[in-house]
Length: 300
Image (cartoon, rainbow, N blue to C red; front, side, top):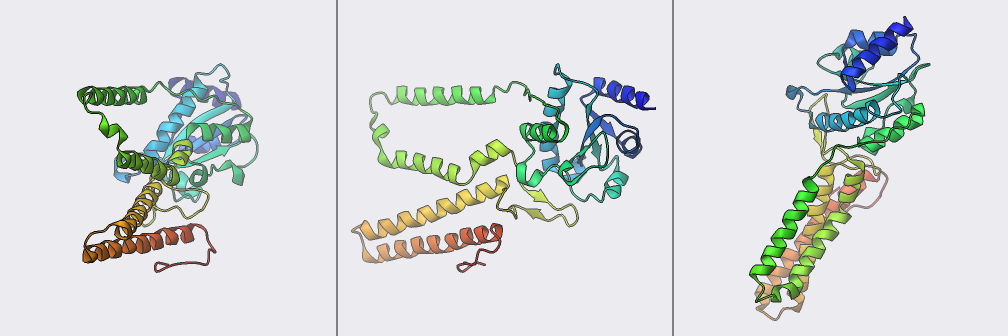
């Protein structure tokens, strides 16, 4: 019985790196003993009518990880990658009391899954490298992730260099714009906004853009934990920081300019309004993520 199960899993794995399972296959090859192999299962909802963009993104990373294992020299029958789609195995979701997707679980070769056998997607993200580290902790199987070559970054860089080179060539007789302080200041602010909003964290962790509650369909753009964030959240923080900076620039302009007093007063009020409102909004987001933070301003 065990040998037949292993042979069947190996046959499926030879056809595709991620084995698709319905309820019957899941109960027979993942849940039911005997079993001397570990199984990684991604519970997901990939059908278009489910509108789960995060599921599609996570599935791409999962495929990269499974292919890295399937075509590595260390590949063996001790670990298999499988997927259960909600529309093909709704009974499995009900059996496991699972109400969100995607979810990654490890089913060990012996015993029942423990709490650590459920991957913390919200805190860590679903990048292949993070999944590989989690699998190594749970199974002692080391997977080196191999990503297919992606030349989009190289092409974009070449286009940017060509564009800048062409611009400099066309303006070769008048390069005073290079010494424009305002232009360099704007470029520096863009870099600062990108870094302080968490774009580098997104690049490393690969979090989902947002989270849609499968029960009521409500979409969350702000993560409720201080240990994680959504991509949309970093965009919101970037815009808030930009609005606050614009308000400070207007306040400085109102104080340092020598124009009409009435116009300066209007600029001052607009700048003050930008700083007060958007800083209050930023503080409220901080308060919602760091539970117990006692201070608020205007917006709670």
